[in-house]
Image (cartoon, rainbow, N blue to C red; front, side, top):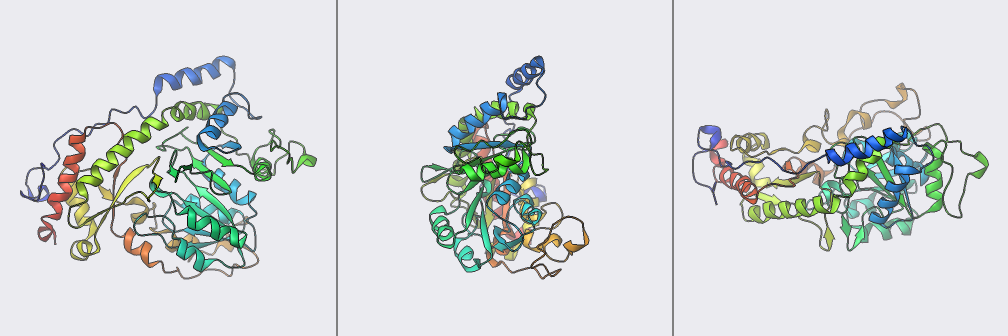
Length: 431
């Protein structure tokens, strides 16, 4: 393989390990189809849909078919799906939600919008998803829900989590924003917990630019989510109609999506199986090539599960490696070789603060100083010290990331693996 352990490192003036083109041929936005779909709405004069019909109803039906739930509800973004889910399952003042620290902050901030308290849990080192053992340790009488994030398309251990939740009367909210089309032992994510939440923002596998979709089998939960954010739509849950006396009023939030966004997402949903096939193949090629590279640990799917969505591909430098060489230096060396590899962004930045359990919003910032209901009035006493999450802190200091490649040549992927091999073979030169 080109780019083995031999040769001078590119960061020190040697030849690059990656010479093949990394240009992806996948059309991220199916422009022609999207223009037809959105143009058709314009021709009809449709620029808003409040009652869940038209393209919104078509998309929700298609998403129900994908996930296998009785209901699907579109929203204007993924954060709205999570707020809707927490509200629906009864998260409020006096309650707690168990959450992973290793995720995007929007998995957690809607807990504050409900006046509740997030409780941070550790992750499994091999899969990067929430650890059922730590969930069990942190359940209290106040626990109302568990947020299970299927991070980077890797599926959490639902066989452990669901019985725990059921034994304690706790709701399970699946944040499947990275995991469109993923399967847990044959079951689609978003259909296993009480509510499934899917972001359709930006670079997600199914994207409307800014939009989201929620799934559930429970008619009352569906009606509660309608009540929170969908003025004009009215309750639709079969046999439930929990809030009929309120008519078509909502509680003041307005979470319905723009029909143009749903038209775009509908175009991308049709291509999801093909996208997942490509990404699964490419991640497997990289993992197969890296599995015997000393100092690099691959992130594998859970046994019996099928990853989906992905968003990014992840790898770990071993503890022995980062004890010798800072991960920043490894990142620099890999990039010099032409490999598009960076430190993991959730661990490194999450924009300003690193891992969420250490973020000022949850530790040093006094949320009582702002308006609204962003703290639990029954329990919040002001700033607190960050909890210790040893596995999260260890693993996330070693994570490396590259693109979730779709339509690229195998030779390019093997050269990226060769760059890892070359850098790991010259660690002494990076100290």
